[in-house]
Length: 192
Image (cartoon, rainbow, N blue to C red; front, side, top):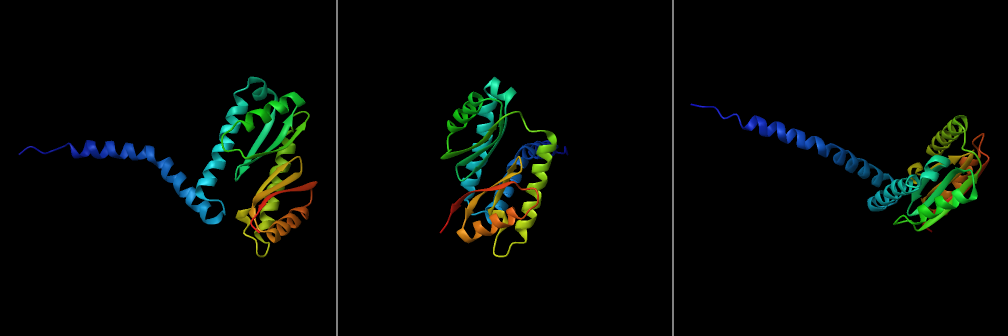
């Protein structure tokens, strides 16, 4: 009696097909974890990630912007915070035009400095400050630190998120107490 060997090739084919789904499963799992800790809906979270990606893509689509500017785009609930540097006002305005054309952007906050790109040392310091602030926020009583998005550029700290006013004040005060912070900018949306 002849053995059937077709189940093995089908099983192997199915395994390779599932391999393509792995990023979707991981992304779906990450979105679920974020949704459990974030006041934004999963849809809003995904919209913000999409805004950030499309904004960077739009900026890089213009050759002069791609070569000349250093821009970070951070979106929370449709508010796009633009930080970084542009060597001229014209290039900064080009960035603003590109980002304002991205679907889903309700508001842009222009914090782009006119000047040369920041150095690697400056960016490392900003990352270090962000880490220190996030660590400090974890210890703040009656504050879920996952609600607060922290962005640091040139030692200026931007705080974003959907929060209550008392949470905003607690987070702002905690950020101000971190050594090396030059200024704290509140960009919260208030729930109360």
